[in-house]
Length: 249
Length: 249
DNA sequence: CGACATTTTGAGTCAGCTCAATCAGTGTGG
DNA sequence: CCACACTGATTGAGCTGACTCAAAATGTCG
Image (tube, rainbow over all chains, first blue to last red; front, side, top):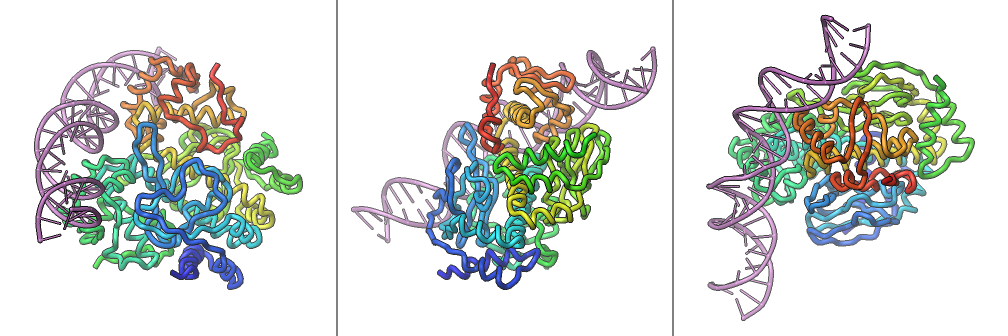
């Protein structure tokens, strides 16, 4: 596939808040990219590694996770094409968590040096990357609130709201339906729940007529009701105002 | 008190990983600072605000928090003197959470413009601030893992380990004892627990001889045991290797 | 001393957990 | 085309960690 196309997704995201001068945009689009394929379930970067490059998600769904002492996993974030989930490794070399492919994925490896050259030369580029990491932190905060203070059904609904909103923002959903290539154990690990409990509460959400979920496809049947259950307010995603809006039909 | 002294704490923290040229350090120390006093329990910045300045914690303990739909609070982070908990407002104006004083606090307000001038002119300064926000994100991840996947006793122990480690790193503890000016409801809100349950599990930790906790003072009696219960590994704090080490006596 | 905040304890409930099957979908080799 | 293996989804049956409600005890400070 086309490397240029993958980088365009990155630049599109970086320009969400402030657009870049054409020359800087060009330099971003010219970043060197080595494509690498990963199977579903495979680790992309492991906790403890010292990296000299960062990973652009080109195709597929990627997650960040940690394993605690007794083997339980917590999924910390989900990453769609256009994300560089380990951009932080530019400044904090040691990985304190792992990145894994949830689906078959294509990752574009970009040497730190190449990115650093751009961020140091152009403050707008630096700020754009920095801003992306700040928005990611904002999403962490929202997840923390969910895990700490929301009920299981609310957390599940929240994940659905967030996922379809993000997919819509990058043009991979129409706001009503999208692929959700997560198994139930994976959703449970993202929400801090057990698989069994997740499954039971998910069934209730389905039976309440809020969503349909079959064969990795999520369809929202009652957006308003889902948002209400989730206590969902998209502000924390810091998308463009228009992009954040999902209209109920 | 001395503004210069407050800024020195900030610069000390910023230089944890990469030291700055003297000229840049000087410019940081010359940042304009308007001191403002807050009572315990008072909000410093509220969710939804658009700010034109950021807040340097000069004295006291500050927390970041969100309130969910049904009124429950989740405390998202704790901030010690030298922190700028809302440095992100430089790039993401709208606050998606609030900052509150947990103790009487002195806050130094710094206009965004002044900081932006420095970060845009000196990539090292920009990177130092960026790095701080990345380390904060790393702490969020660790908290998320705790709330999602650790038992109540483990979470409580983890908070103690983290707090005393951070206090030691900035010279406010000897690694054995420090002030911990948090009420039990506050600790519970940070850990995603109810106050009552927190209290009961805390008593068990006390009775196991791991810590003493009286009158806002935490004393670690068995560091090794506490770390074990907490599954605590200070890597995620990204301190200097020496600073992260707390020796059991 | 009195007022107020904080901590502690008890009792009862429930959300979410574990264990253990069962069922369904998908891919493989024969 | 079928038997087998494997992963994921679903369901049932307890169990328990954590919650709520309520009250008592303790500490703090003007």
